[in-house]
Image (cartoon, rainbow, N blue to C red; front, side, top):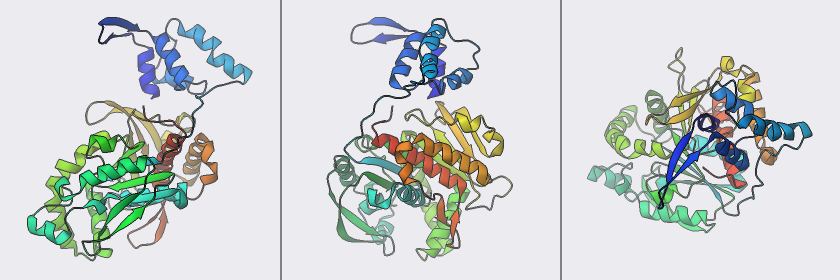
Amino acid sequence: MLGIVAKVLFTHHKVWVKPHPKEITITPLRVFRLAHALGFITAENLPSICRTRGAGQWPGGLRDHRARGLQGQRATGKVKNKMPFKRIKRPVILGVVGDSASGKSTIADGISAILGPEKVVCICTDDYHRIDRATRAKRGITALNPEANHIDILEQHVGLLRQGQPILKPFYDHASGTFGPCQHVEPREYVILEGLLGYATRSMRDCYDVKLFLEPEEGLRTKWKIQRDTKVRNYSESRVMEILAKRSEDSETFIQPQRRYADMVVSFYPPGANNTETGAHLNVRHTLRPTLPHPDLSPVLEAGAAKKGFRLELARDEDGKPVDVLDIAGDISDKRASAVEDLLWNLIPEAQHLRRNVGNFRDADNHLSLSHPLALSELLITYHMVKAALGQHAI
């Protein structure tokens, strides 16, 4: 967000307002005042905006405003760094979408543990399969195809959950590949929906407060798929590879296009020096789109985190649009990881009572392990969940 504000601050733009053609000049001063009023520019992040563009001076008219306003507030100790948000009364909804074995359940379970299981209801959208496994095999259709799912019912249920209403949810048993009795689900303070097709329709996408897309490196996802399906679902490795081959076309057609709708794209990948890594020491890359007001990480970055496993850069996404890219190394030290965790928790003081161990997962041998990149990823997502509950919604 800071990069976008900075770009506008140092550029004059003209726009046309409809239905009456009227040219309006958007000056840097006007943008500055609007961004300040909305809480995007504060005394704390003001220097970061200037550094983003490498500017030595402020545009004409901003220097006086800066001196009189934010710096004056800092001098008097009366810094107003955000608007008075009001806690929303409906459930906050997080979407976690990605291909099979991309880490959706691990992320969802981790965030639920942070927020408190008693405050969270997790729903796997695989329950909305329309066709059982045997029938899909006979028809030659995969579970990734919307035609094999009750997208209309899922869309209706997401809307009801957002309104705080209960649903009677179908149930799909992965062990047998068949359906069980429907389940009555009451929404809680937070709702997490994880699965394959959570962003399939516009109506559904509009219901989420935070949208996450998981995109691990493909070789890593294949290893995760083999680990899970051979141990949990009793498949042979050859059977898993056969399933992946059959699903590859549908993955490209139906799953990958949903990436464009996410606020955050999270991609785990093995470090270059150890491409066999599949667990605690994986690197992770966050592609942060300006559809959410992401946290200000400059205090940690300025402390030299870039050299110690934590780096933030401006980049272009696959579609050419500007994004922030946050890289967290799998070998980040305990001390550096702890410093970043402290910063994130300090950014959500409303949730200090939720603080507990994060980043736990089951490794390939089903042992409980700790991953710093996973922990920090869960905290960044939790940050947005808590802020959404306080009324700070997507831009």
